[in-house]
Image 1 (cartoon, helix red, strand yellow):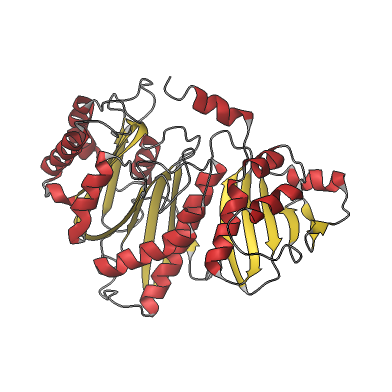
Image 2: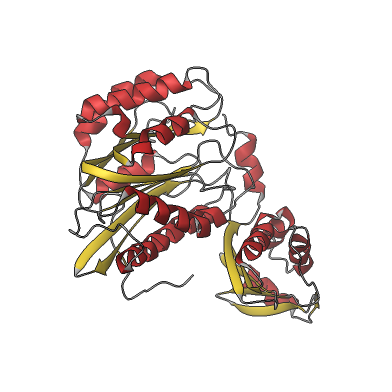
Length: 413
C-alpha cells in the first residue's frame, strides 16, 4: 500500500489528538489485578458523525447489537468500553449494555443513543454491572484532552495484549491541519470477517456520516480485514470512527480530493493499528507479512495472502526460522483459487536480507544458513510472485509459538 508520506505525518497521542475529544481510563473492579485498568471512556465535546463496522460472527456480544442500533442515525458522542468480560451469551447482556449507555448519558448530559458501548474479555460469564455503573461518573470526572488521558483509555481496553496500541497522524488539506487518532486492542481470537478486535478512531475532519461509513468500510477491507492471528473470528469485534468536524468548514460529502486525502490518512493509521495487533499476537515472536503480487484479480490475491498467513504450518515454520517453502505453496493450493503452480516464485525478506527459495513452483538452490539468518528477525515478509497478472494484496499475521497454547490453555484463570 502506498501513502503520500509527505502529507501524512505521525504525531504524539492517540484518541485525544484530534480537536474536540477527551478520554479517561481507570480500574473499576472487573479485573482481579487492581493495577490493571478495565474501563475506558472517550467523549466528544460536540455532535459527531459516526461510522462502524462489526463482527460477522452469528454469535455476537450484546454491546455489538446495542451499538449497531445506536449509530443507525449517523451520530454519536461517547464511547464506553470495559475489559475483563465480553458480555456475550448472557441472558441479561442487552439489559446491562443498555444500562451502561444510560449511565454514560446521565454522566455526560447526552442522549443514550449517542453512546457506543463495547466489551472484551471472557465469553459466557455474567457481566458484573455494579463496578461499571460506579466507575462511569468517576471516568466522566477524569476526562481530559491530554495524551496521558488517551493512554489511560488505550491501556484500559487491553486483555492479553502485551502492549498498548495507540497512534495519531496529521495531514493537510486546503490549508487545514486535520488529525486522526486511534486506539485498539487485540492479540488473540483474531480472524476478521469485517474488522478484528476493538478499534476506536477519532478525527476532527468534517464529513457526512454516509461518506465516513464509506471511507471506513473501504479501508477496513485492506487493513483490519487482512489480519489474522489464530483463525478465530471474535464475537465482539467492532471498529468505530467519530468525526467532530472541528478542523475545517468544508464538509466532505462526495468522493472529491478532500475525501481521497482523508481516505489515505485513515488507511495509514489503520495499517499502523492492524500491524500492531499482528505483531502482538498471543505468544508471537515475529510479525509476518504475506505479499501476493502479480495475480489476475484483487479478491483472489487477498484469499491467497490470507491463506498463507492463516496456515499453522507456515506459522510454526516461521517460529522455528525454517525456510520450508513447500508449506507456503501448500497454503496457496488450498485457498480455493485457480492458480498456475508452475509460475510461482517465493522469497523470504527481512532486514537481514532477501533469499529466493522457490522459482516457477520448484525448489531453488539456496543457502540454509543464510535463510535461517533472514528468518530469525522479528519482522519477516513472505513474498509470493504469482506471475499471472497485475494485482496484489497484503496480509499480516504472526508466528505460532508454544506460548500461544499456554496463554489460551489457562485464559479464564
